[in-house]
Image (cartoon, rainbow, N blue to C red; front, side, top):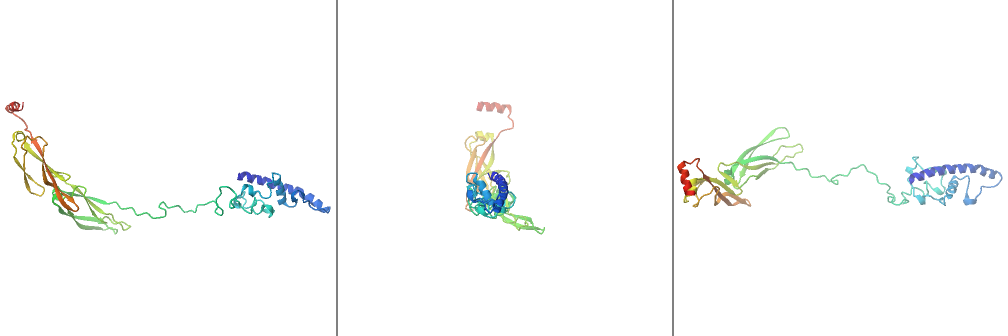
Length: 322
């Protein structure tokens, strides 16, 4: 709509100038004959371009005398690219300082519906980007831990022990620093237990250093296997003992603390994989920083079959088992 108004104003301006130019000779003749310029028809003065323009707009249904009230307006800085009102050469008059009356831009005076509040104009960028943290500096990212495995035997985890290690790290000046550390392994620790040494990693330019963390790994044991708080051991029993034994046969087991324990075979027929559970001979169970009890020792019986049988032995077994 603004573009159409601009175009119409250009045409109206040119036509008003033409009418004014045509009327000037008539006015000169009237002055020469002793008369004065006519004031009829709304007070038209041929020598007043503003009056000419106002009279011209009256032809379109009484729009003269302040078009700004009907269309609103535009900022004078945005006029036709010319840097000012195209009617400034006419001076004051009914059109004021702005192109449509009202003494200025009706954008700023609330002329156009939906415009920005008075005095605010169209908001413009200040050139400052909003911070993703709303102007607040985020906390520095925590350095990842330096992980080292701490391999321990079941004996170490059963009884507890002390491990002496040498920890090396690089300093900012390029030198290497070595520290002797002692890890107090407590009874009942298990795989995954962590021991942390704060800020013992390599030094960084910002003055920070990562933590060094030792993670417990259980070494494989030749006889025992850990299952949570229980210890499992396999004991072999000959086929004849498993089938015809009356029970009460004993086997001696060396426990993780070095003590000896005699285990009796079951009185009934022993099946492969059958278990005997002995409470209190398993791994220590820690709670609130101390050992509160021990798990079970689980004996799994493995029936040992002969490599081969003679013909007479096979006949005998068929008679007994058939």
